[in-house]
Amino acid sequence: MTDQLLRPVERRVRRQVEDGVGLGEIARRFNRSPAWVDRVLALSELPRSGVTPPDSVLRPIERRVLWWRDEGAGHAEIGSRFHRSGPFIQQVEELARYKLERAPD
Image 1: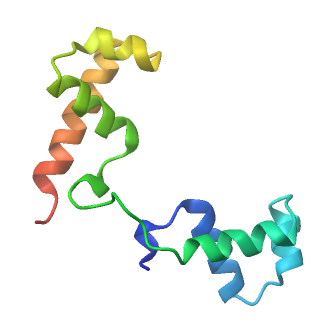
Image 2 (image 1 turned 120 degrees about the vertical axis):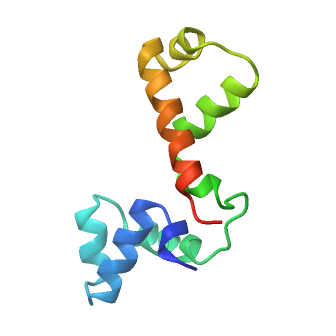
């Protein structure tokens, strides 16, 4: 699986394993148990579903804002859902649309 599809914690754990850090030390660094590290490694090997380009270039908030806008919601209405201002949501929408325009096909 490519590192792009992994969550940040999964990338960090796998990178430390590749660097030769022991499972006990990784667990200590994350304030978790060695069993947790084993689970993270095992789950990072599973195939992901629902992640398809071009949506993968968008952050979750960007995907949700675009979805709400497509449903007809206004910037202020969406902003109240995310505890943000209308202008902030407008900026998020503009950035998301820009990212989608620039995304490779």
